[in-house]
Length: 409
Image: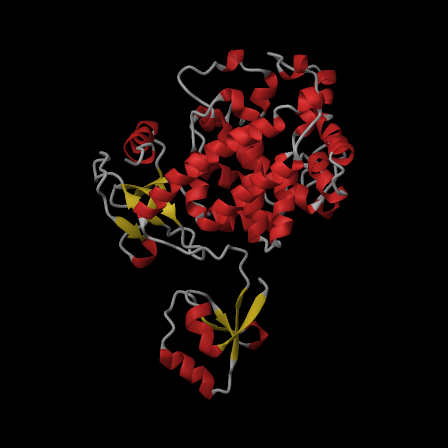
């Protein structure tokens, strides 16, 4: 079972609310599904039990708020900050190919900005990953930013020190820097790669490692991020086919972040004016999900499912568990269908009860959009539950137009 932390009996109400409580020898004394009453605490004390144990979960210490208006206000503020950070990332990384220069001090300032909004409201930050129709010309910089953002969130959940989280963020921002050494004629090619061309693309991991070691003089564990971010837990990745704990810890985190970002790309950079697959480069298509999965719209919900299914094969199972504890099975921004036929948007989660998040009702029983629906914490009712994830893209566009993309006056 999970690691157990010791707490004082008198702290049960504040530190173990809605959690399983254990006595010595992993003996289950009370389940999290039952409310602890003062009499229960007094009974334990009468037994001369001054300490109990609760599971040490890897989820973040998130302040759960059922205030949708607050979530929306902070999301809109964070969106402006995020788009400004994209510009800074572009200015910082954009010149490397021509002049081999990256201002590491500026990069550290960017990391500080990211960490600041993550610490303020994680839920509103996670909604940023659902942004769509961003400029294709900024694709590389958005990808670098998102991989850094997701990696830092995971590192924070793994109880890394703040300095270590920042260090991970810098390395993750530069994880794909080796692509600058791959010839443009290969990256921009339309059509199938030859064996030789694909071998050259895979060398970007080695190129990146050398850049991070020689140009930036980064420590070995940071440079390893670029070298190992395509290694898989089961040993079927590249460039060296490493497995398990042979793979650098930071790299295993970035592998998950990169996979999530890759799945989100089709909805993130998309518009009616975007090129068809026939006109996309082979490398661009490699960064998107397979054709089998592109038959339907991809969402953050699908990305979470991919990590769950890939745990112990592609991804480290413990890091996968940490990732899922943050993003949960119904991630922020998911449009869900309730058993009473109404639709709602997940805007907050109950970390210990991932299938019962907090939602804002956005439709009536006929599926028609409404903007004055109630807020429901599914943990507080046994009458309602999530019947499925709604994939109606037209409805999602209504939500964006009427709620998410409406600017503050």
